[in-house]
Image 1 (cartoon, protein in one colour):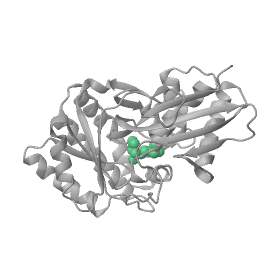
Image 2 (cartoon, rainbow, N blue to C red):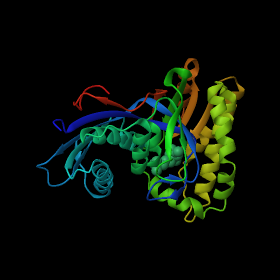
Image 3 (cartoon, rainbow, N blue to C red):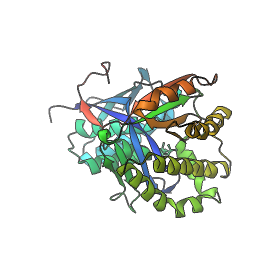
Image 4 (tube, helix red, strand yellow):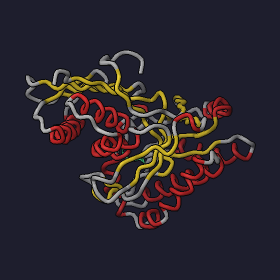
Length: 332
Ligand code: PMV
């Protein structure tokens, strides 16, 4: 093997039908299937260099050397890549987000999708999209959905072999736009890995799971038929169900902040006045408002009227994870 270095770019994604809770937390097999949209322009770019002379793995995140839990998680992940390749090489990993990490947009999906592609390629593996998605899943569940293009469904599967994500429709299938209202920039107190482990303690989780395949069917159909209203109502319901589970787990998790709720309450009134928009919220206070291309500026204008919103990101549907030139500092 002559080339030990590879660089990859992957998008963040927003879940329409949420993944919350694991059936197997070490393999990150989810309690239910999920559907998401990749977010164009909100990307992680990751370079991996394996070298026979390295005696340990190192990680640079946005230019700073990382230690502690962030480094351990990457080492654990590289162990999987080394085992797959049958090679015992250490790596220098450098990763950059083109959006502020502290902005509260889930960065682990983009980061582990990019790391899967870069690390597997650098070590000489030539994985299929399914194999890459399975590998990314081991780093962060939702990362498996950032491997394929556009609108993506994660089949929960029943083992490591059959739990991976596949594209339902390409990025240019539907001109949806995600307007992300940033309401808080401090890191969240309870990370999603810990959150998943609490899901089963909520008496509402079983009800959420029983109906999940029905919600997945409605969501998939709404995407394929480009039915904005049907997509909006199933997404809002699914997001509220997940937050109900979070709030009723032991200990209770409250990711929504007063501003999140203010926006969530305003959205139906905007809809009544003719604006095509719906909300969904992941494990944090920032609210994602989905709309259509021609209404996006109006949605952003409305969001800018909330004094507690510090910024609004705008993202169209993004493509698949891809290999790129080995420079970190050029445009994503
Ligand atoms: O991939 P994780 O472990 O960060 O979990 C993601 C959980 C949610 O963002 C709340 C939902 C989802 O499906 O992305």
